[in-house]
Image (tube, rainbow, N blue to C red; front, side):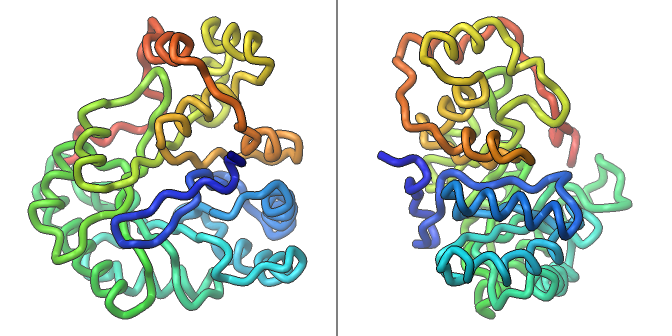
Length: 291
């Protein structure tokens, strides 16, 4: 099956492409236009952004020109944005409205709480729990108001996710977007997500920005050679093969194309090798210390 067409049915009832296009650190009207042009041509139909990426306005501008170019309508693509930690609390509803204004959209397909902590709040403060609970209530309101189709979280640990599930204001999270790759994955978190019908979506699938350690891992390189693919394709396929969402980002047309060209199988023995890489390492920020 063509990987670009694989979708996941969220617990909200909405269909979400399993492969999305990440836009972290990609900024500027011209660059955003260029990468989204290449992404849509390659078959991506999900675009992942966030308030703190400072590129929502550029994405909105680009899509106004690019959707007609590819004979697409707004409903043909899936747009995700995320709440800035500085907007945690009651102002989360206004933050959703601001993202919609910048993206020039009537609705968002998915909106996530980007981080369990709140801006200008100590990590160990119980204020974090109060504010993110308020944020969630605001996002539930955004769903009922028709501004957002599905809501979820990012960087939520088992503790944060269990707290939210115990007090979800009537709507369960649809997605938990977390760091996830063969050197850092948490089976307990995946199990909880699957029990609750929450899609686990991976970021830093290739080891994070500017870090080639995972791509150069001898086991990954050997498997790529054996399968006639690139290391990046092996790492992305490893997630997709487990029904985990991915949002690889790239700037070059060739990388954008190869990141969605995952129509191959990694045999079980090789998947086992990837699951058992000797060194375990987390490359991005750690939410474990957020109260």
